Image (cartoon, rainbow, N blue to C red; front, side):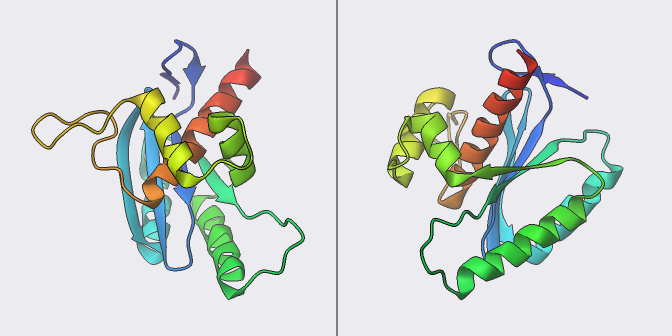
Length: 165
């Protein structure tokens, strides 16, 4: 199934993950809207991904991928890589795309030196304010790493739109 994005083009729904060592953030974009988001234990997220085999809506999975910049890395980076592999395995045979943090920064902010606050502001400008509990906005309830997952989803949405053009 396809949905319409904000520009009127046809794109696939996107489930984006910002992976972590114990917990990972996710955002589901469908019809140009954030329809589900969360920060969950990785084991829970594996089950969530596996459940999509039975869901009539088959989003594209977009996972933020680790990149090497020639610097030494620690245990957390390798553990995150293991979880990325487990997420991809749980998703099979559905399609997966990798999105690198640098690509997100360049797409949303035009600079590889952008910080999390810059990315969050760019996403607020694009999607709209969080609003209040009484009057929720399109990004209501997003917090912490969920913003990074939304950045992955938006970058993937744009990548798909450019491929279709």
